[in-house]
Image 1 (cartoon, rainbow, N blue to C red):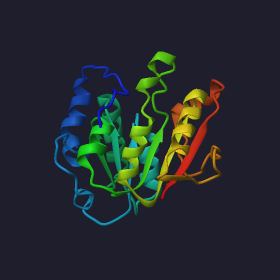
Image 2 (image 1 turned 45 degrees about the vertical axis):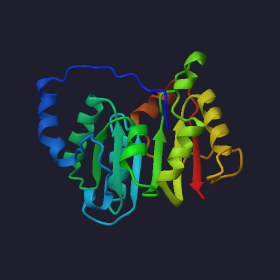
Image 3 (image 1 turned 180 degrees about the vertical axis):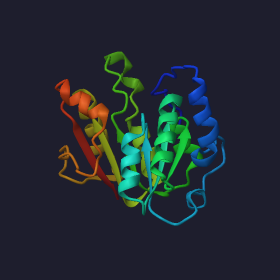
Amino acid sequence: MTHIRSFVRRCRCLTPAQQHVLDTLWPLFGVENDQEVLDLNALFGREAKKKMEIGFGRGDALVTMAKTHPEHDYLGIDVYRPGTNHLLKEIKAAQLTNVRVLCADAVDVLQYRLPEHCLDAIYLFFPDPWPKRHHHKRRLVQPEFVQLIATRIKSGGCFHLATDWQNYAEQMLQVLEAAPEFINCVKEGKFAPRPSARPLTKFEQRGRRLGHDIRDLLYRRE
């Protein structure tokens, strides 16, 4: 699968304090960005449900889910170092043992690092909406991406998406409804009520203050 990058790397030098966090905590919770296929049970040291968040930002939702469900294991993927550093600090502060972090392109990880049908859930909360029409091709949720997602989620597993951008929400809904591998958990062609299980993040709170409507999509893998 060839793909257009859905992100632009914004390089920013880490401060000495941020570099110290990376040096000390990455060996504990980080996953090296290489071509080796991951054995998730070996990575977490146990057999448990495996869930992944794509684009964790500062990691607020990921940490909350991991705290709420210590019986599950969580893999977080993002490309931005400052957000990764913040997540590493939060993992350490909360003494979590069920979170691992990858600083990499999610499509590359899905294609090359994960075996088929290894995940019980994938979360995609508030991806970059690329609002300008001529940038819509950069949006992550496209038919090819959803087909790839389907190969990594177990039968009966969940794909949960959320966005505060109406046009993108409509595109997501159209793409998922057309994917034969997924069934809408609510009703065909309908958005889901906000699930209580999705953590309320600072990003979402800001969107609400700006008057943005939040739309959730919940799909089950056939």
